[in-house]
Length: 189
Image (cartoon, rainbow, N blue to C red; front, top):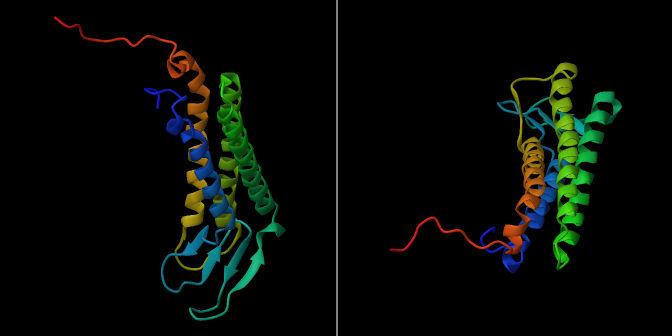
């Protein structure tokens, strides 16, 4: 990407594309029912960010209770949701920033800072949830934090990595825009 610069049409949209993938992963984490699942037989517990479901036996009917009745449940959902909304805002700002013919590098650095704030909120929600869930809700058998919880962590890691990339990108403004002559490390005889 740096070799051709962000003016190169195909490379220009890599960062907004990665942010879009992060948004998709965030939607999966918010909507997924696999934050916590029973790992071994009997499979009697399943939880999401919003509710905890149990059943008495393997083939029985699920009985769900909302986690919004707990203060920590509301806190975990609110902080993760705020992080997700900031990620969506960063995605929209990145599309605007890269759609303009002349890149505004200070604008890009601001997106990076906002991504770090989003990562802080996301990580807060991802830490509150398992700590309080495992200490305040009785669990049966062996349970594991599952795929939707993993998508939540993937979103948070993407926010951190893309935040670094967005913040460091303006340092290479001249190289990206092609204003610097290439340096060769060998000489011809």
